[in-house]
Amino acid sequence: MKDGFKLVTYFRKKQMVIYLRNDGVNKYLKIKGRRKGGPKLRMSRLKGAAPFFTSYGRIISYRNPQYHLVNNRLVKIEGDIKDSRKIDQSSTWSLEDCNLRNTESGMSLDLKEIEVADKKKGTVIEYGIEGK
Image (cartoon, rainbow, N blue to C red; front, side, top):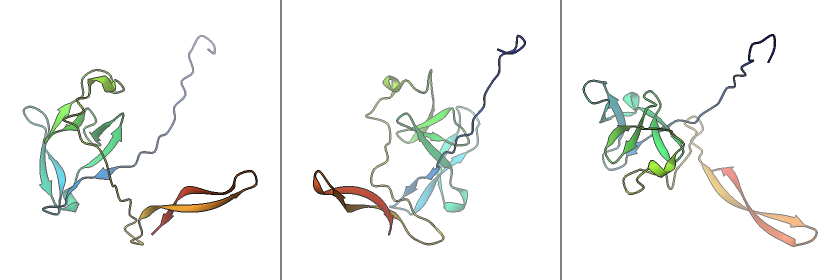
């Protein structure tokens, strides 16, 4: 506290956004206007795709951060976002078999086994990330 005032420290956070694609129809999730009942999900080409991010086991709309993806709709987050006990695991989405790809180079990140020499244990296999 300085001269009776609390000092506030701000920080910047970088967040990776994801675009969710339906491989069957080769279209992306899009969020349509915020009228009655909140935003609605639609399908679109990449140009109109809605960005999402993950946090505390939820897939959250980047432009409507008070909503997360549940089944086939966006549902308003109730209470504390950190309270994962309020998440019904049977109706939420998760990310599996994700492909992080650089659109410029066309390269994707992949796990790679790396042999590391260890004086005590000999050769040890570890995993790292490489462009592929």
